[in-house]
Length: 256
Image (cartoon, rainbow, N blue to C red; front, side, top):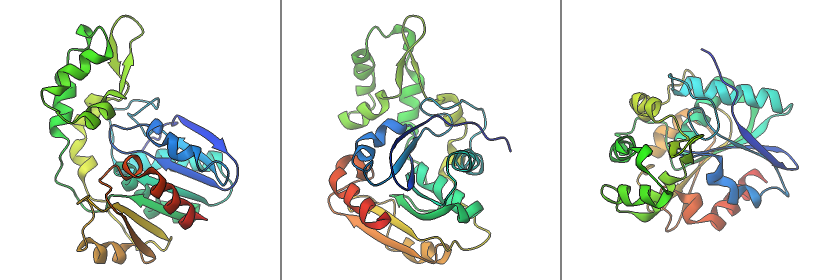
């Protein structure tokens, strides 16, 4: 199992806090949150493999992504760290805890559980892969094409953060779209545990999201003996973007 060196951004001072984004995201998604944490933490914003500026690889699963993150932490930090992951990044955090919990003081997992999910990104991935990027003259052209299958403006803007100027004319995807599509079933798969995790973990969910149900709490507590749960009112799956202030308050309170 070969790990890769992840691209990351470091800022602030204090105890180390690593933040992992979700599927089709990048470290930029958490920049606003990070800016409000730098007085209390040394924040490491991380691009996971096949996302942002991190290396592209054909293989992609949670043991591999966790190996990347564990390598980064071991290289950058000498004391146990705080870690936060959203959605896919939250599952990477769970895998990290399952493999080497001694590296972590506490964790926050934002709006995801360890179970297998049915999917839901298929239409987005199809829309992205069907676009002829060589025909785009400007970023707004991509937005117009995406409107056909993705009417929600916020979702389109999130996707378009992956669009980058090519070295020559035109655009390219920053993420490794081919690998993400090929490994999508693995990204939706459950996290496998050999033993329960004793690290304190806060499962932070959006009140309007269905990613973590009340029925999930018992199974989560079985694998995370010190699990706590908090729901942010009127927030959906992208809890940090929809309720930034409340998310920052929850992070400071739990990690403080």
